[in-house]
Length: 110
Image 1 (cartoon, helix red, strand yellow):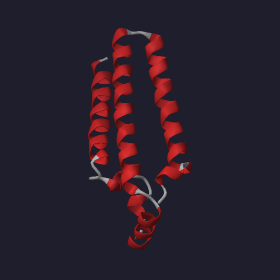
Image 2 (image 1 turned 60 degrees about the vertical axis):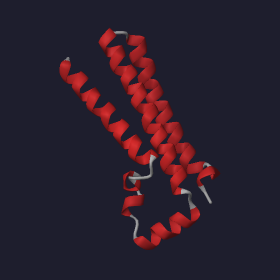
Image 3 (image 1 turned 135 degrees about the vertical axis):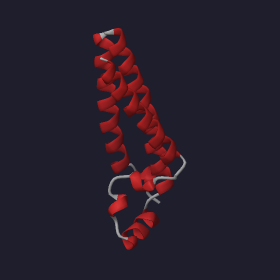
């Protein structure tokens, strides 16, 4: 059981670290697709999209997901099935909703 807690602690720490980097605009290369673009494509994308807003939003998302991972670990520790199911469901729903929001919202366009 301690291996599960160790894995969850590692995932929690990675989300916090990535959230901190993205929130402070230090790791745009972590954003999927942006790191594989050519220099010309990045310049065009930077002109049409607000990368600082996207980076800050994804950083906040990482903090929220880290919180729910902590709740999930706590639910596993307490062996409370409802806390485990609710936290897992919220992680999935929030992740999917945020991906849809980032890709369809005009908030991130210049």
